[in-house]
Length: 371
Image (cartoon, rainbow, N blue to C red):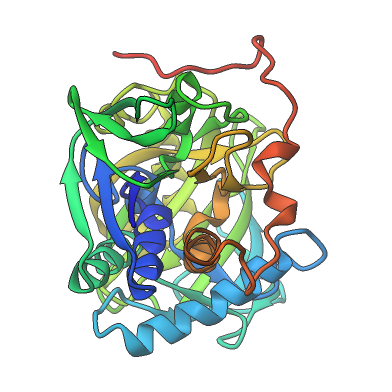
């Protein structure tokens, strides 16, 4: 059996790894490069119980445990570590400000008020998402998986009309099963398969070189800009000496090529201004990346994980929104069970059944555009 996985992000490479562990032959097909989109430009934050009370709870808890297990057993380094996590609020500073109560985090400005402890090293952690994605692919390759760079443009079928693989750069690639795991670009596959809608929500981020100035303390913050707009910046110091900060979402068109994604005009400048107010350490730090990415969103906020309705040997795994890195391992494990064994048993996938979604509303359909 050979499975063709369309998409080289955290979801696709995790599926490849767990399928390879089952002894299944795998080819990952990626247009631009591993972790070229959200899997390389996200925060990599992990939480044990932040999805409790939702259909994601079991998936998230299993995946949080798998992250720790994989960090111990795979034999690669993707900067996995546990974190303290806090919540606070801030606004542009106007004159001297004295911090009032709460938690005193030395790397934050006096005007950044930290009122809540949101997580401990037992419940929150992080990975470097691009390194995690690359490590999963290398681990899969060590078990026999292949990586192919190319653009998937459709499906190939045998004489009886059954799925026989995909078309890559104009040539058929044979496979016994196909998995669509292309993040928001999974909408392209709606031309070949009866897939539910997936939309792209754009987010902006900056990566700072902060060295050893900031300890393992993540911060979720409400920030009121001078215009009155309220943003929710998230700050994640990493063990490699960088600090990742994200905020400011938009619904701009999705480009056809992930490599063409660029920040909206003015968004990075606004984010830089927030960072200067939030932390003198960030204000003085060198910026090593100014970037944007699209997160895959579904109509009900839940991922699509499972069989494509009405098409034998076709599967989809996308729509994970902000929890793509967290839920990649458990998604990979469950998809491997579904494909190799006929059913997932570690996590109940029924809440994420692709057949649950309503027909695509043409008024909301957001197709990629070539810029």
